[in-house]
Figure 1 (spheres, rainbow, N blue to C red):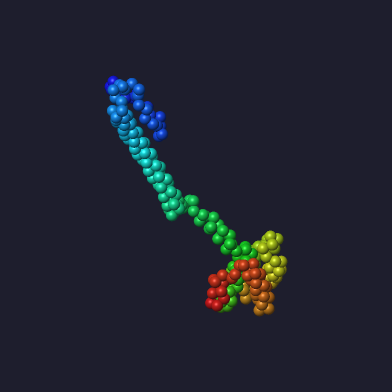
Figure 2 (cartoon, rainbow, N blue to C red):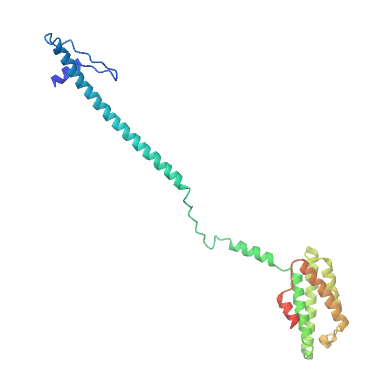
Length: 230
C-alpha cells in the first residue's frame, strides 16, 4: 500500500495530453539510465492504466449507443407497421343499428295519400259490381250501400288532401261528382238502379282521380289491376 501511495505521489496524470513528471525524490544514485528506466517504467504503468480506463469507458458508451439505437429502431418499426393494421370493427348490437330509422324512412316513402287509398277501395268495388251483373238483388243492394259509403269517405279524404296540398282541387271536384251521381240511385234497386250514362260519368270521374294519384306518386295497386281483368 505504501508503494502505491509513493507511485501516486511521484506520478501525476492531468488528462489526454498529460506528460510524465518524474519525482525528484528518487535517489541520486538512480541517475542517468536508471532514472530514465524508472520514468519509462512508471510511464508505461500509467499509460496502460489510462488505456484500460478508456477501453472501459468506450465499451460503456458503445453499449449505451447500441441500446439507444435498438430503441429508436423499435419505435420506427412500430410507427411504420402501425398503419397496416386495420382498426378493430366495433360490434353493433341490434339496438344500436339504424334499422328502426331506416324502416321509418321507408314507411314514409311508401305512405299513400289517404284520398288515393279511398279511391283504390272504390275502384275495387266498381270492378266487383261490373264482374257480378247476375248477382242476387240483396247482394246488389249491399254493393250499392258499400259503394255509397266508400264515396262519402273519398269526398272527405279528398277535401283534406286539397287543404293540405297533397292533391289538386280536381280530385275533390270529381269525388263530389261521383257522390252526386250515386245519390240519385234508389237504395231498393241496388246496383241495377245505376244507369249506363251514370256509370260512364262515375268511371270518367274515377279515372281523373286515378291520374291525379299517379301524378302524386301513388300508383294503382296490382290488386286493382287484377280485379279489372277478372
